[in-house]
Image: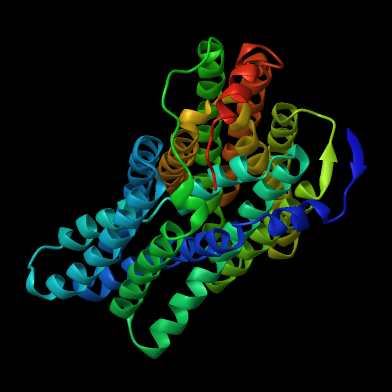
Length: 418
């Protein structure tokens, strides 16, 4: 399984690649609003309406808007290029934020914040998806490219974790409306910074049709999207069960520490995964991570009668979840043609977000009636079912060196990444 350890050399190679550091920085800045705006919109809606239910709807609308917006931006980027689409989305997010805090006091309708929140979610620029494509173009060596995907995932996770902390500081210093504005301005600034980089400006979408392997890779991409949507459902179940466990076993404040523990596991596993050269295919690695996640969430369900046991169990959940996300991203190099790579990545993230929203909704009912332990057990069973489905359909995920692979090689040749 393990061919050789390459320490941190893969990360060094990525960071030394000309033209990648500034867009990578812009990507991190662009991920901060994802951790800021959900909480900011919830608190702002509560301040305006006095209802936590409306605040929850505003947060959900933001997430759904983000899913739809990413998918739309991916299609547009693969047609018109990165700078125009990313910059326009970031500007729209900032303008909608200004419109929201300016007009909300004048509009006597509770749903206004919900609708505006959905618009801000749709305007979050697809910097992470665009960065994923630049890594595939500019980092030619396979092992270093996988390290790049791992680095991107780790930095994204760190940014999403930092977002709520920034929101907390803004709430203390100002208020929720300033936090909403800050999230919109950060999205806009990151989009303009990314769009102005040479790597983004010189990247060109590829015109033309997919090679003869397209039908086969299309089936593999459909299987991958199915698995990612299912993984999102399980993540949504865990996201509901963890605060429910904190409320049952301790206090609401413990939920933040529990979530941070799982995120720490993801970060550590992501760094380790990218620092190692693997002999197994990315399809097999993803399935192994799915199996590990099912066992880890099941262990969390067993341990969820004690906070002391739940912390290490959730750390293990994070350790298993990190490699799965990176392997899924790396699979796109095989399953999606270069001409649709941005669209494929943003679609993959979008279906995960939609699955997460479904998991939130269903698990809220389950946790409310049965408790947090059955909710976690449900998430574990769901992951086990996904592992079985993925194993049965693995041949579609791992097409091997056929026409599809050669088609990807041919498409990469004329690409201009800068």
